[in-house]
Length: 325
View 1 (tube, rainbow, N blue to C red):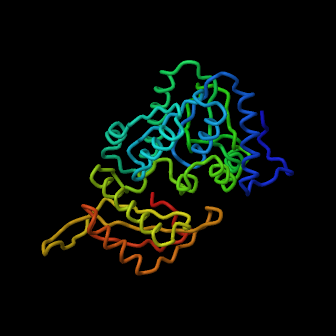
View 2 (view 1 turned 45 degrees about the horizontal axis):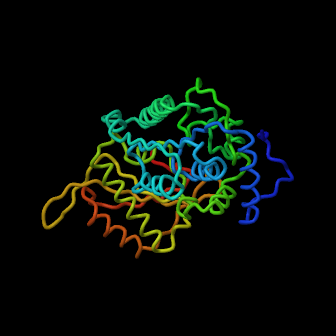
View 3 (view 1 turned 135 degrees about the horizontal axis):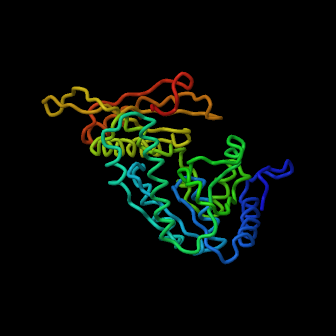
């Protein structure tokens, strides 16, 4: 078992060669730790859990059981991407749970941000517990813990990848990337052959679009948010802006008056937020060229049903936070 302290002599993983050496070492360690037992992993589709899944598939194959819960609050195409990469390309032992209706029914009418977060987190625990109870012979729990998690939380990783697991789920942990920083995890992910877009996936809050569909979530507004966000991402990728740390759309729970086809048209505003940071403690605003903003605005207002206005958030952190709620 590795300690939770990164040795001062440990070389930073910056090249494919170093990543391959790390992978080879971890494959050996995981096989020694796990033997012929099964390992359970909550696979969110985020960078950390995806890299851990790929590494463990390489080490123990079908002994790894991945559970992906689609809470209906993912960005467009993300759950489908998990199935494509892990279920198909890597032939993982993948359990896919579409809990969209279950979550959205629970969230109906709930507008208070912390209450929404609590519902989303607690429901994940229930679903993960239900799925794990159906399985036999699970002896280990894998987690995408990375070194900053240990530094910030003294070794306890609270609902980042796994949503916060029940205390009674007492299984030995498998944490193969726990001594790595995020940039090193990405190098390892590429060495494992994961798609570039998955390895460089942006930070995404645990509650997903639940905290970007502001106020009480409705299915029609959530759909509009997902479509508008997908357009923003597509245009950023097409125009060389994918280096920006985080960029997304938030949609508030009020409508504004507009005009479409010569008639009064009420719709929601889509709020664009694009920020850069080094440490996530402070953030600056990305200066998006107006020509790109005009195209994004035109596409969102013409292609997304229910959106009739596009706004740009120019607030740095501090005074604003990254998310709106």
